[in-house]
Image 1 (tube, one colour):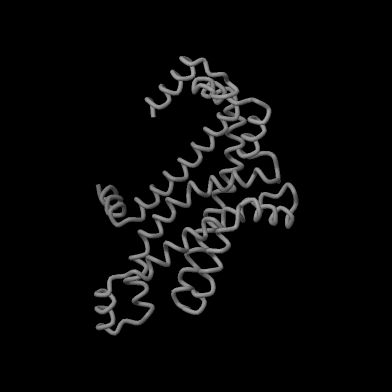
Image 2 (cartoon, rainbow, N blue to C red):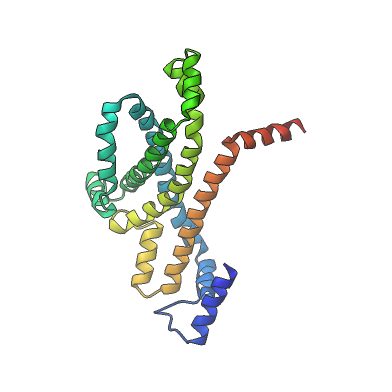
Length: 246
């Protein structure tokens, strides 16, 4: 990273690249420091939308995964519809949602994040629930285990790594969806609006400073997903018990 930004700064200086074409990292960092309060305010708006959408989408995706596992006919109906819905461009769905709610409402953006996260979680968790070791299933059947016991003892533990893989994908994707949704209407108080408004008025350094805020927000969400995975894993739980015992 240091080499990348150093090369960026050197190229801009050596070739005398004009600011309207490419802004040096030093100017971006300076604008970030000067506008840190405004950037933080925009990050809170976009971050809140991303977090709420992430939680709702993850919960909905997990719940629907269990339903589709139980009802095969419903699986054949819902899965193609979910794929088709995920293929619809963001600006189309956001425009529809914006017409359904007040212009100052944050609900359309949260709904958009929920849909994107829902699909990622659904696909991964369903796969984890189904792709269990046949030997484990046969062993449970030999013990006359019920479907509920098979689900609790075999399928759910197998699906947990898939869920956290989906969460690590969906966490930064939620941030991206949240501020991209801001480009298509609604309140002008999030990262997406600040980025476009500054770049449109030739304030390139300020615009890139808000981009840096978006990057930090996405990285924070990803790190949070990693922390949750570490805590929820058996290794993380064992380490916690060891610290408590000490």
